[in-house]
Image (cartoon, rainbow, N blue to C red):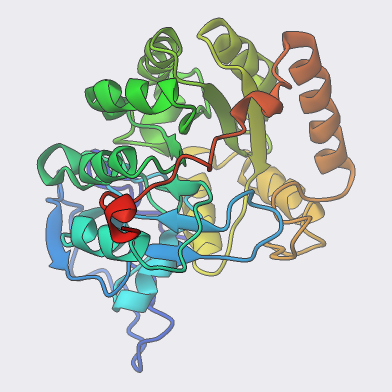
Length: 353
């Protein structure tokens, strides 16, 4: 098996087959032509005029029923990202396309206000940046996430944010105002304290130390912070679980969660290729533990088990997490209950006159 290393700053070099494409093209190396992996790969951003911006779900194991994602694809390039297969819906590859061919919903502000102003709308917390990170690098220029925050603050609408980007501190002025009204909580994704592992696993995401500084700054500004150890990967970062939780607690996190690695659709092949490139000596063992935790398969999409897995490894991981969370005082989830009663679209009171 020939393993291609990714371009500098990217998670993968592969372009797996788009499962919706009518043609399937495979490359074969006959030894006559050697294609070198480029030293870098530019990011392309295209605009999308979204028909709607609030996505609804009825999943019983995610903790929210609506979300807003300003972007499709994610420049952070995390090899494990469960959202990679969604890029196939846009006739793009879940591989390198997911990290380099991004889509920005440039009419986000207009559509968000339209939906919030509908007469039958009832406020519940919006999860911002769930499928792809709302604070990925292109947010510096696009500023779609900041637009969403400005609107949600004006409407007094509650929201949860999950990110691994330190760019969130740019919006500390808005977040502190939202927090003072009990309208926001922030989950910081922390997967490793090892800079080298971060570089190959999450190439364009913030460094571990930067994420801890971000937690501390948010906490000091009065913004409730939760740490998400997601995903936990057997024999890659699982041994760090207790250290991750302790570092997050010291940085101001008040609660914690975790997710066991999920490998839906094309992601399984991409992840196995990544293992062969970076951890060939343990690749077989890693995948064996993944499959033991997923009923013998690469992935188990059933509600209730997809986030935690099952079997001996998954049970041991869950026990370790519970013990560490209790010991560190990170089990205060009640402090993340947001206030939905303040929701008031601008001009709503005038409409009642």
